Length: 91
Image (cartoon, one colour):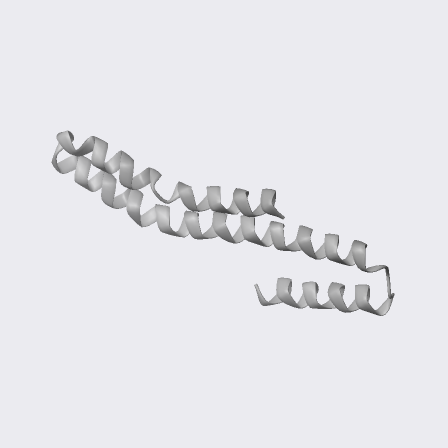
């Protein structure tokens, strides 16, 4: 993660040093921001969905009537990725 941030800083300083017109710099930063928004939202969803899915499987193994609750709790973190997609379209 630190290497990625370092690479972004190096790219940003290279863009500033070339004194390119402001519109291309702004569009480049928008693309970087959109990629970070979606990527970090996906990582957060993956990290949260693992334990939730494991707990849902255990809950369903104990009581089959709670399948819908397990399905809802497993699908809930997917809304975080939708917010990442929304950030892409807003930028």
